[in-house]
Amino acid sequence: MTDQLLLWPEDEPGDRLTWSLSRDRRLKECSRKYYLQHYVSRGGGGPRASAESREAYLLKHLRNRYMWVGEIVHEMIELALSAFRRGDSVKVDALVERGTRRMRAQYAESIQGVYREKPPQACGLIEHEYREEVPREEWKRQRDHMEQCLRTFFELELVARLRKTPPWRWLAVEALASFDFDGATILVKPDFAWRDGDGVDNQVALVDWKTGKARPEEEKEQVAVYGLFARRTWTKPGDMLFGHVVHLADGTSSTFTVTDLDLAEAEGGIRASLKEMRALHAEAGAPEPNRAKFPMTEELAFCTRCAFRRLCRR
Ligand code: SF4
Image (cartoon, rainbow, N blue to C red):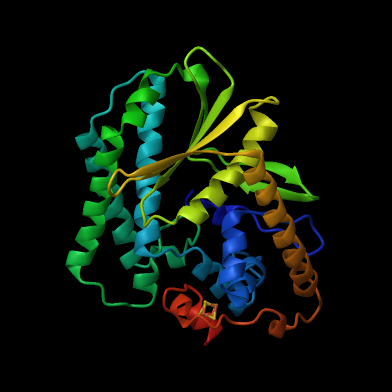
């Protein structure tokens, strides 16, 4: 899952909430950031937006270089999988070349500040917006990381297996979807899902490609939320759910069963998160929202990489 869920339209106070794991994590990281991202930025792309709202709208569309590489890798993998599905062959060198061209074009867009005119469409990097000194070698390392991730992808035994799986067994490739839960809309975007099993149709596998460090607890939680969607959409009672989390930097992976207990815990987590979000939603909808209800994080490490640090004035 990349942060593309950012681009989903925001809910208005009084409306039904849309919940995603990235929204939940943002709130847990910093309530003020959550407020700027989901409320102050609202309408910030419109002609009558206030200066603060316009600024929040611009800043919320920025990403750092690690998120950016993750997006490019996911985009290239999506292209490869779509080609495999059509029965076309794809060469890893060609995909790496395409990823490199894309990174160069987006880097140029960012350094020229094109995103200030078109925040949702053009790539904007936090490093450029805040004029951070990032050595040329570091940008090159990011390109090399993209290449490494794509080469790992092509060598995976899992991918060889997918290529032999008939397309009718494929269920989703980077598909943004939603389901209803507790009066809210839950957004999910599994990287890949397919109906697994030799000669049997009672197994659904959910795959997540990771380009960053391994975070086993978060990864299991994420797959369990996808599992809630899979249970409602692709499985019948008794079917089994599996998660495959693949770390593309080094090719390590973990495969696990998504149990009914995992799903129940995920539901409990969403329910608790929605309760907290609803209380804040009511506050944000007040004529004069009290910002003290959206306190700044105490973890200063979060601030050093936060896109909103200028607007937040910490
Ligand atoms: S700069 Fe720090 S306190 Fe301010 S919004 Fe960002 S994470 Fe929160």
